Image (cartoon, rainbow, N blue to C red; front, side, top):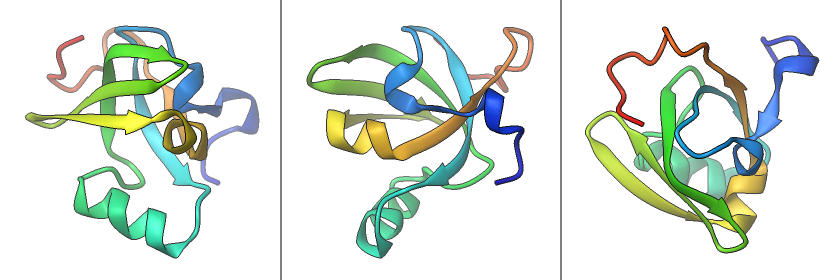
Length: 91
């Protein structure tokens, strides 16, 4: 991992409206490929627009909003971004 381990959280641990940069996907090859097809890959910024909750979260990646289940949000590792580094993403 490229980020300091203390900065890395699972996507499920982010607060509503918080933005982060994807560090890694801990799932297997199939999950990693599915996330890449959705635009969620290492280095990409995303924001939580709904949730997270027991059923998952909705994230904004670029111009798309994507619903992810709790099992998936637990496997996506992210590094939170400061409020000034949202890269044009709306919270």
